[in-house]
Length: 466
Image (cartoon, rainbow, N blue to C red; front, side, top):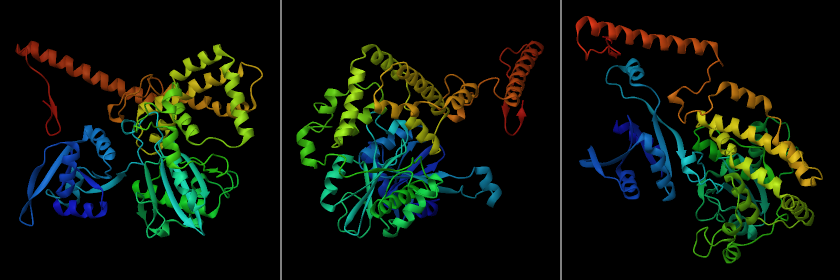
């Protein structure tokens, strides 16, 4: 077992290795020392290595998200090593004492979180990749919890301002680049190739050209290549939801360095928290997605006069219609965070509850559109946004028929497919119900015949029913 652990640890590098053993994730050696300090859990030992006891600690699998959140906040990165076969499969493969195969299935880092318990509802979680090409900086940023992806290019002396605006949770940059921020994780320089970035984006979105998404420079595409390669690395070959990239113009937004932002207290006060900031003073959003958008807009003030006037016209239109505002807020309060639910589904970490949130969110979005379309003299910016709030009726109808009203949070719980959606499933459920009733009747019969009130019919995998 320890040989298997050490091989996986070598692959995990500087990440803490969560090594699955039954119902626990175990950590050994220096990983155990570090985790026990951060998590304030007992440090024990298991066996010996090199003549010395092996430090060990562990956390329950069912509570892993809670411990992962604390480790990520402490600046740790974690590799998850799961059992990739059952004990029965291991026995068939190599005999009775064959070790169950394990593999690293995922890396958990600050910028690649999708789990609801690990994310702040009102704060975007940005991962950014940056590189230098021909004297210009390429920057690719995404929030994989929603799939949003932006590319931009700037001069080297504007990089600090761009990073201050993004407030990224994690940075990656090519190894050997002297201009990389100190906090950036180093990745192989070959991953930052602009041709590869262009090809990957085309393949991801099934297009022959990126022209329909915007004009992207070589530095932008090089950074995109590094970003996608890193996401493939942490996802062990699978990619999260990535929406078509959006190009950000350096001139479209006001550039402010970190000192200016701190002085203005836009998103955080001088004490370091949200309390006392401009964002805290004006944030009356009733959804997490709205709060994240407001923070992004405050962090990147527009400079284009026409864009500013279009936004103000929409604000004024809503300000003048108090009844519409109240109707919209009532609908939005019931709106789930469908962007993050979809992100978890695409990443393979979704639950039946996420499907239910998608159903309910798209249904509520349709109601938002109906409220807005009922008003006349709509501003031009709203006319651009309205089409995005509809066109999902068939999907809503499918999920309404297929899912129970309140799906469970775990797939293993079952019971999330609605009765009447699938005849074969309904038949199996009926058979299972009849079997339970038949066993209960047989149990009652034997109690009467024997006079043993405590008699019970049991079942196990070896004997069957007895």
